[in-house]
Amino acid sequence: MSKGIKVELSEKLNKLPPYLFARIDDMKVEALRKGVDLIDLSIGDPDIPTPEHIVEAMKVAVEKPEHHRYPSYAGMLSYRQAVSSWYNRRFGVKLDPSKEVLSLIGSKEGIGHLPIAFINSGDIVLYTSPGYPVYPVGALLAGGVGYELPLYKQNAFYPDLDNVPSDVLDKAKLLFINYPNNPTSATADESFFEAVIEFALKHNIIVCHDAAYTELYYDGERPLSFMQIDGAKEVAIEMHSLSKTYNMTGWRIGYAVGNSEVISALGKVKSNLDSGVFQAIQEASIVALGTDESVLDQIRQTYQQRRDVLYDGLSSLGIRSARPKATFYLWAKVPDGFDSMSFTAHLLDKAAILTTPGNGFGNPGEGYVRFALTVPVERIKEAVERIKNIL
Image (tube, rainbow, N blue to C red; front, side):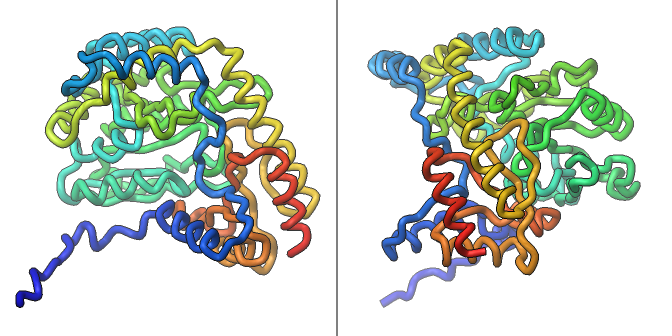
């Protein structure tokens, strides 16, 4: 009887680290298997339902026979027009929906595919770290090399673009940045974005700004879009998603906007590797993009209340962090005597609280853990009390 073929992974796949959130999910499954009362503050998956008017729009759209066929790779023009209108209302940015907007199966898909469009073997992709693990993974799978730009508190969690080595810049083709930032929750000002544009023009580097969290802001301080800055379209695209804004993580829909040549190249990759977004979801997303701000304000108020309870609670225990201005994450220094992983394990083993170790987002994240504000206030209060009892 045959023993079967010998399966050998590619060199690229062998180089990949275990995907951070898959590891977190394994930890969660094991804890639940033991029957513990787990408070999960790890993965940024909203616990608030998708607003009802969006769900109702989906119910209507899914019954339309015209949506049951293959969708356009670029996305329905009506969806791209809705994205364009939203950008104009929200940021004062005008976009050509036919050339400067592309639908995505969630922004993760676009981030992962973008390097394939521009990276040749040995080319360098610059990316901020700690950050979304897909940035370096996309570079590696495209045959490129990721180069980590550390984000430190003393630099307001901005990368030091002035000190990137010249030999790295010679091979750099692409730069990923992300503000409001996951995991640090830092926001970017106009002067930083202007410096990025100057850097990109000087070194002929395409910029991809991951803007998934612009609508999760607090205290009325609305974050900027990179596209608002003069010259941004000359060097950059911006990825956005409906996942966090409208509590639609499971719907898998997002978009890229900006430089038409970069958008076209990303669209060429998409048309060869995947399909478009289910049109019923696009139609419901048009309704989502027209959502009244009062609905989003209520969502933001919920997260802001959670932020304040967790920040105040951790501060009272001597766990230091910045009060986030945006995102639904709190980036906290681990107590003395712990590193990122040991504190994560301590919280899980002794308090049944699941967080994300900072070094899982890159080496500069060592010494931190990320708390996600994705459980109700009462559970956050309970988490603080549990941490108090084990410190």
